[in-house]
Length: 266
Image (cartoon, rainbow, N blue to C red; front, side, top):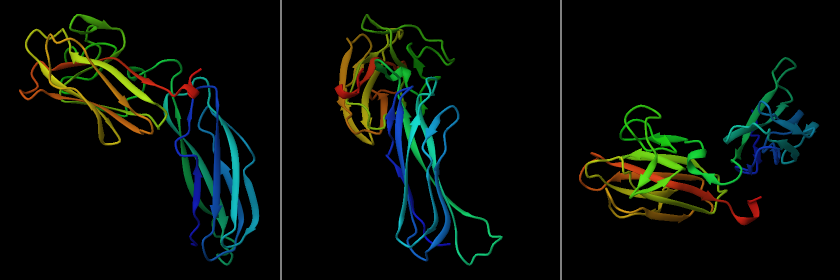
């Protein structure tokens, strides 16, 4: 089987529902050419559409590229987050025999669909989640161990309609695909805790700490965290205990939001 690299791009294109994404494919035989009956096609995910005929070649010499471009339409009800758009090349090797099956290589462009309007963290999919007491909660406090049993997000008497309620130790991971510019949140121990709690908040981008609070305790006012997330693919919102164990460490990311660059806002 000859080496036959296939590349597909762009890397992690970003789009909203109802818009289009440009996808490109390039197939080349590095050695042992030529190959024959070459096709290059893009496959539409379920509910999506692909415009473009791909590319065909009866014979492709060593080092000669075959390229194609497509316009992929994101449906208006597309799921938020990553969706793979597969690009496939098929070909035959002369001398392999008439009954030999065609060879196939495949790469996928991972299109990232983000919600319209304000990009709140609680509206984005969590690609990974750990939480010290029950599940993390969207737009409510951590509560107890059942899903949806939290109350309003409230820090130092201030209530937030949007945000994420967790319990130390907690990690919430979001895939940003480099689409956003800034992250902000108001952080602290939720007022639902009757005993003393203490926590530390960290914003981590691609493994690097971008922002960190000091130790925040029950009754403290909200502490605002802000981080530059330009070019960040993976964002982790981490809460650890304040050095005295995790008892009563109910922590809120109040009004946690992601800001798009001005050119991407509508």
